[in-house]
Length: 218
Image 1 (cartoon, rainbow, N blue to C red):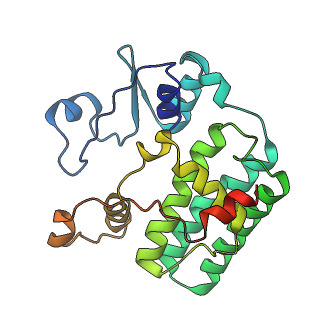
Image 2: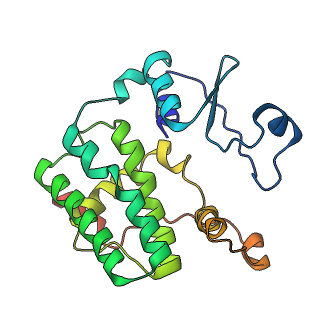
């Protein structure tokens, strides 16, 4: 998502190639063997692993350093969110769901206290590029597997998500609902049903509360 944002700001040109890891093309297997995306190729140099990609963006990609800010509170707050989602999907019990809900409430409280459009201010940074995809996975996979929903009472969090949904950098990098669901089915050794494979891709970007109320509360 970081790269989509930089492309939107026209600091780089970006080409994205998707790979079906169940049937990767021959040239992908030859060059990267069993390496899973994302893989960044910059002027012929291949960078693997998320942390190395982020480091390369910060140091070598034009404008990339502007995305990386220091904020220990935010970094600590979003760090374990994804692991809590995975526990919910594996355990499927209310205790784990309650822990995830409490974590989201803390993020909602931070956004309410700061009153900013994004996590650290009114412009996006690296933390937003981490948080919003995780929130999308919570919305889609949480609902599908365990009927988990982000409470509508978390109004600052929904306002944040509303602003993120307006950005091409997010909507263009966001996987379809079916791809998110299939990702977790593969982790649980489940297979997609035939009709699911044939479905037209859908993208959950709606907001369950009134957008006008969100705008009036800013």
